[in-house]
Every structure is written in structure tokens, then in C-alpha cells.
Image (cartoon, rainbow over all chains, first blue to last red; front, side, top):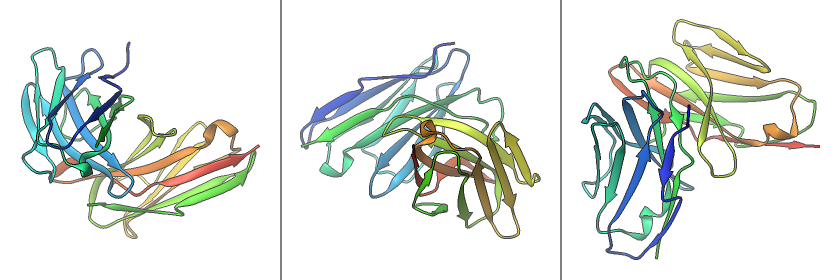
Length: 115
Length: 111
């Protein structure tokens, strides 16, 4: 099976702009999660979608939002970008059969630089 | 916020030696997972250990879990240059089912 894919891989934006990142999960996986990785804060959970519904959410401001489509593909959006949003954004998928958070399969990430 | 703290933050060993890294966490967990990340890329799942398990093996990897001490360790035996990477523990807490990552250990294998 093809792995988790994320597009774009690299992105440069300026403060105040908005950005949309895309994630295609492994075929058959219904759960998609998003994480932000920065040198200062490490890996932090943003949100998780399952069957087009947000099932879990981390402690991020409302500028960070996401959605999931019927084919399980997911997008996350960051509005009014700030310098501190510069990070590697990772998407992970899983079967989502249980709430027990089984193995997560991660994509290669989108590296966002905000100038 | 970080649930897990990993120790050491960085580790350099000779190829062929064993590498041990530790993870401590704060609250009761459902399971604990270890991931590897190569140079700013995506994470690769290594092993999952449930709260009612004490030890698990996968190839050259051995993970232990001590719920009384709220700690876990990852042992990589007979290290190889390809093991050079950052290793993260991640916990899943009962009633709040998301992965909460530790701070990571940067492992360097010297050929």
C-alpha cells in the first residue's frame, strides 16, 4: 500500500497570510491526525478526524482548523500566520477501529516557513 | 505540553554497541509507543507496549514498561549506522486518547 502523503512538502508564507496543507492517508485508514513539530515545543497534537468528524483536539488557537473529506483525505488550515507557526506539520493515519490509538503511520511532513 | 521526558537528550555510541534510552511520564497511561525520526522527516512507529505489559521485543529492539515508576526504556542492540535518528516515546492516556510525545533522544552511531 502507498504510505501517507502530504502536500506540499515545503511552503514559504508571510505573516498574516493563510495556508492549507493536505494529507492523504493510507488506503482504508479512516483516522487522520495532525501534529506540529518545532525545536522549542517539540511534537504537539493539533487534532484528529475520523469519518469526517473532529474527534479530538489539542491546545491550539482557533486559527488552526481542519477538515476531513468522505475519502478520508484531510486538510488543515492556518489563518493569519504568525512567525511562531513556522514548523514541520506532520499528518498521521490509522485504522481508527478503536479509541485505543493503535499504530500511527506518519507522512513525511510539510515544512512551513513564515517570514 | 510534554507528557514524557526522555533521557538522555543525546547519545553517541560506537557501531555494534547497545543503546538505551529512557522515557518518564506523568499520568496513568493506556499504552506507550516508541517512534523514530530521521533528520526532520516523518516518524516511523517502532513498537507499542500496553499498560498491562512489562516487556516487548521486536527484532533488535527491546522495550520495557514500569507503570509503578511511570517509566519506559528502549534498548537497541548491536547498533548500526542506520539507527542514527531521533527517538521519541509517546503516551496514550485513558480518557484523552491522543499521542503525547516526549522530548526525544538524539542517537548518533559512530561507524
